[in-house]
Amino acid sequence: MTALVSVIVPVGPSHGRLLPQALRSLRAQTVPDWNAIIVNDSGRKLQADGYTMLNTGGKKGSGYARNMGIAAATTPWVTFLDADDIMMPNGIEAMARCAAEFSCGGYIYGDAWTVTGDGGIEYFAARNFE
Image (cartoon, rainbow, N blue to C red; front, top):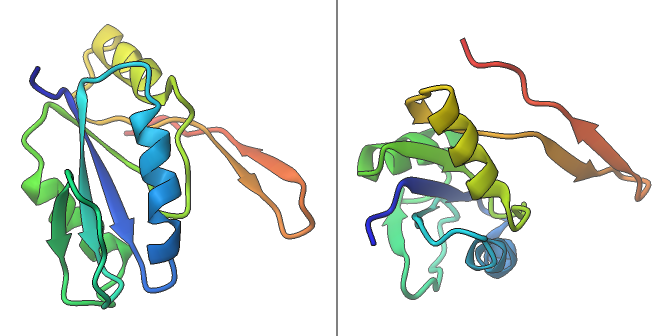
């Protein structure tokens, strides 16, 4: 099956240990039409068998890593998942369905929840891309 979505996963200097959790959240997706492009910006060796791995040379920054991943993507849509994040199991399905419905091209993204310093959960609604 050809992938419809490339998930670009930049890995910064302190996030290598968190990569396995992010990858588990991708493997739990309700649709199989994705591939992951891991961009190692940590400056250290990372293990991610079965995934495309690119190396920046270390500490170039998340924007550089994301752009490097975009350049390597061959799918109609691209989304991003930081190594210290997880994606809900229906994340790719929901984003791809919305992108197809609204004839979006290029990038897809969704809302996010984050854990705050005091252990609370904060919701961030994604703004429309223009």
